[in-house]
Image (cartoon, rainbow over all chains, first blue to last red; front, side, top):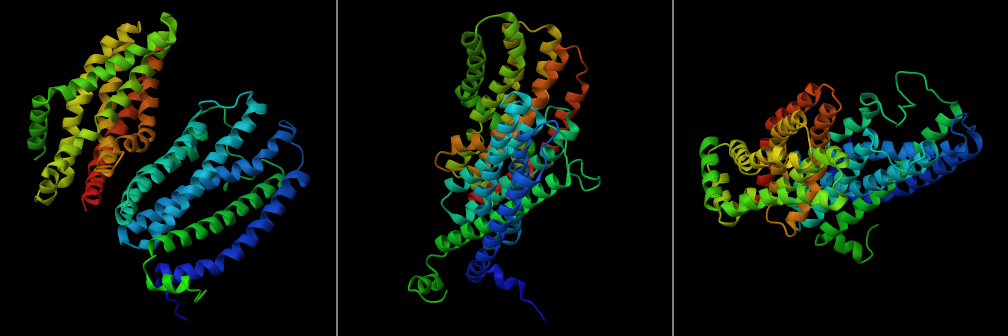
Amino acid sequence: MKINWFKYASPASFYFLAGRMIPFFAVLAMVLLVVGLYIGFFVAPTDFQQSEAYRIIFVHVPAAWMSMFLYMVMAFWAGIGLAFNTRLSSMVASAIAPTGAMFAFLALWTGAWWGKPMWGTWWVWDARLTSELILFFLYIGFMALQAAIDDPKRSDKAGAIIALVGVVNVPIIYFSVQWWNTLHQGASVSLVQSPKMATAMLSGMLVMSLAAWMYSIVVILVRTRLIILRRESRAAWVAELKEGGVK
Amino acid sequence: MIGWIIKRDLLLAMRRRADVLTVLFFFIIVVSLFPLGVGPEPDILRTMASGVVWVAALLAAMLSLGRMFSSDYADGTLEQMLLSPFSLAALVMGKAISHWLTTGIPLVLMAPILGLQYDLSGEALLVLTLSLLLGTPVLSLIGAIGAALTLGLRGGGVLVSILVLPLYIPVLIFGTGAVEASRAGMEVGAYFSILGAFLLVAIVFSPWVTAASLRVSMN
């Protein structure tokens, strides 16, 4: 069977595809969230050093991962949009930015809540915290630039350039705990080593990360649909949609 | 080509000296405000000096970014430059160099005098000046990207700060880190190496990215 991959590169067909995908991922996100929170709060053992306060890990770590990962995805799609002039990829990129910024903010804020009982302070200027803060600023800059430009074509391209320039920050955050020996604890999970934490803790964290992924997919699809509607408001199929035609 | 554009921009800057001097005096005034704000204890001032001078340099560089392309954009010169057969990246490089010569160099020259206000030792002053000498061209080069992207936008001046300041942070960290290390009696070579690496990466990528940004903005 030959699949026509380019079919869904058109905003109109993607709109309907996304509409069918959203409920599926939404249910998945809810289930994973409930399971993850259950493991996190009831199954995972109390940490012998950090007692109960460590449980914020189940929100903090997935949020931090997502903030970095979404930036890469955003820059990737923005770059594709810039290189191949595909409108949909630029729309997806701008749909990702608010979710990425939300996760970056969440990572910083839950980090502060974790830092207060563990380190006795809400904030330290260590390498990882500072670079995560820069990541948050980069998201804000991307959104501010796109918001300031009225012409969608120019706004897509300008956003893509600034997103790609900001990519240099992501490896810096990722490796910051290895490069600089600071207050933030080193990575607890690694692909090449056996995990340094209890299985229940690890599985809770992974399930919560999957939930964060699914949530991001849902929100990004919904936002992309809205962006498509706004940009294509003069297209014929949108007019048909308004009259209650095809769904 | 680069030489020609530098000569032209410097000539324009000489004709409008007030623009260059405004940036320099902004820098001097901001640096001089801190002792008034936080109190004149020499110990505090010595610890703050590098950070204050560097942050003021960042702000001053940013303040002058708008001028890099805007007057050429307004009178149509930029459009002619885009149409010309010369390499746009080289043109941008020339513009960044002349921006650095008119705003970066005065700051570097002024820094030791301002450092004296903060009771810095001779060696720390030297390190501060050298770190600015390596770091300010990076500011001009990164800033060129922001200036090109915000060309002709409403509220472009504020926007450029949101875009560019986060990208300036690494330069700030290692620039001030060098001065702190020298005050603590440690080796500063590593900091200068990293600043030099920033400069090289910026020289390679920034003109190219800025040229692409200009094409996007001019369409």
